Image (cartoon, rainbow, N blue to C red; front, side, top):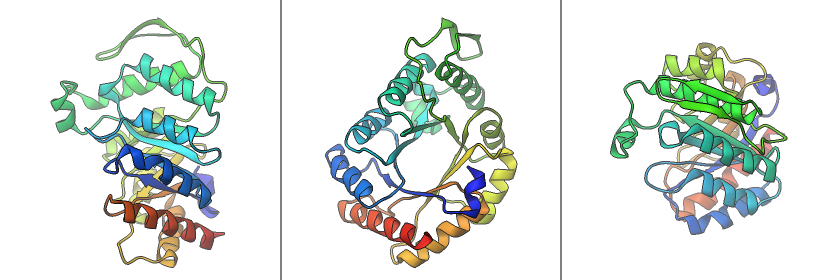
Length: 265
């Protein structure tokens, strides 16, 4: 949450989906043993399913929070997405943070899921999914989403935050309006984060998750300084990603993130 920016933000790492699924168990164990707060998985087409990797990571760990950023909304019916998210939230209360977005449009076209107004779909999808997670009975006749008297039989007892990945001013404004927070890609400078937080009109209870990709020569002190700067700009969680997706970089990035986190204490 933005109120955390004066203290230490959450610090985590990304399991990049260019790594094989078989490598996830060791990576998740290392992230947890290193004392990191978060482990985030991606759902880039056409690599690994985000919900399946998140499920496995949750099952293989006991304390680290697992984030999923991002689920492309066009690929999932909101009723199905809510069922999946709710199941994970009940199995692992307080440890799962899903995020969604309108998807990379070239990928969405490949799957036949592209729509004329991605932002409209994202609004309808996120609103319906979030309402279902909060135990509501949902009927909606939108441009893209149609539900009739849908309610979860097993709504989560601890409702997970549903974040939106955004970059443009309209998607940032949407995230601030209807979601529990925003996910920002690694291209943001601290000044860019301030602008994004302002564009989204982020409230104190909302999260600001920021990916960060340190250069290969960065040391823990460098990364700690970058994390402080991002937190001062409004980030509540800084998630470190390796510049390249190979096993050596994967292990190195966990150590680097953990050492940087230690310097922030």
